[in-house]
Length: 407
Image (tube, rainbow, N blue to C red; front, side, top):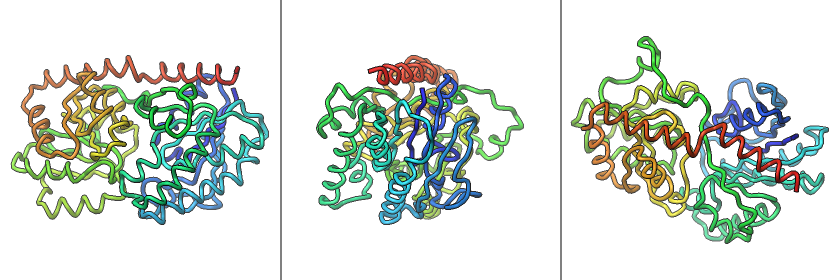
């Protein structure tokens, strides 16, 4: 098949769509990507990129076209609106000219924003190419939940936009089964909605870390609870810091945060204000390829979300990465994410926004033996292989695409 992937984010930004594109190429399909200039999460263009630089690239045999956009800056509402709209407009202008081939289908990766679907709809109107739209993030609900948009009027306008985009897509793929009712409410027939969860890249697996590895040098000694990912509003760092403050007397219990995001400066200030410099460690961003090494050196892996109805429906993508690496998980969230951890027997869950319950879960794992924690992690790895394994899901997606194109 000849597949066009439309995504606002792509390599060298770290998103699951990178690996999915490579996986489809490995299966013999011709993949073209229409994306933006990389600027996530720092809010500025990556080194070497600009409006007129690296507009066309090759990523391991995949041709990548980059539409100009305004960088997301500090992640404020105005900056994000300009970022989202500039990509949608520029990509729509570019899309008729990116390749002279006939595409069998357009595959849209929708993390945030939903406006990533607009260039695909334009191309469909011009060339009649069908669209598969993979929903990672529900709009407008997530805008309200993170506080990005509070105006009911604006949320209603966004809802109408989402209805319009969904109505133009031939298939809607969802990363969580719980998304289906809300998408159906927007006028999408259940027959057009297909469950397709996230996986994790091949390098996410249990690994042995060399004694001289650089990852060891930056980690503290003691029991390490590790969070990896975006430092943003949805991840509820207030609860993490509250919990860390309650156990800061345990000097061998460390909270290790790997990642970046628009709340990093606030988290840094809170660490100093609360006197947590000895037990909370902000390590910054590292390549995704280094994550399995870091995870192997952790005693527990942490996932958190705010207490919002919309977040109860989602499975944070880091859950699959954590499960794949066979480490115990502490999940301070509600709904689908917590269900997966419980069903897998892969760790301990507690309600979102409850620092006392988070402390209890952490201390429970802290009190277990290394052998007990290993058994918990192994259960998670087995669950990952049964439900989220990469090659299994790629084969499923390929089959869905081929059946879809054959219709």
